Length: 243
Image 1: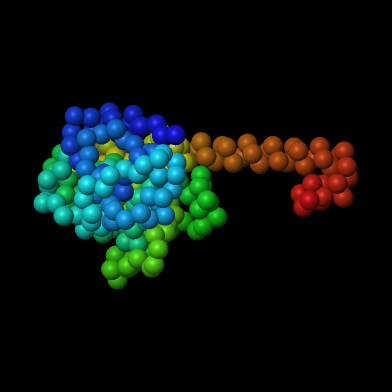
Image 2: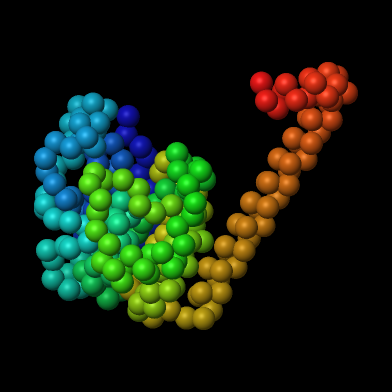
């Protein structure tokens, strides 16, 4: 089964030509792209892709996603889905994507939201850690894995911290493909204080909604605990909490 395409991406990238880093046939964008991957060998990921779909997406260019063999400002856009977290040094990758995208072009990323994946119990990766990795030219350790664990605001913080000549056009706290990640669209053009405030305002609203959900869940658990205590006593409550 193929996952749905992102209407968020289509809104801005239809009619343009660009690169997809680490594409897969079961998770298509439906855009005019060249697929760039670190290998065209039959990796575990490609085997799983073939098992799901009967075939794997053709790799057009074999190259590391953070060392792209394309001239400066040669692409309309770069897209990726569940890829950035696999780079030991995501700052290097973002700077490389920025280099390759033309002025007025886009970088579109869908990244796993830590709290909606199997990474939910991992500590969030801090900006200072990423800056240190980039400074020390941190390299991959063996097989591909998740090196970074983010929620939406963490990656937005990193984008602003890099101080490149780009702006966040918009983002989705819950992406419109799988829904277990978040999506960010960056445009290579001058940013403004007004635009940054719009993005930060949207982030604040998301935080408010998250806090309300946590409070609601907390009240539900408290109510259920009181009901269980009345029905079964303290021993029944303890058994319910620790079966």
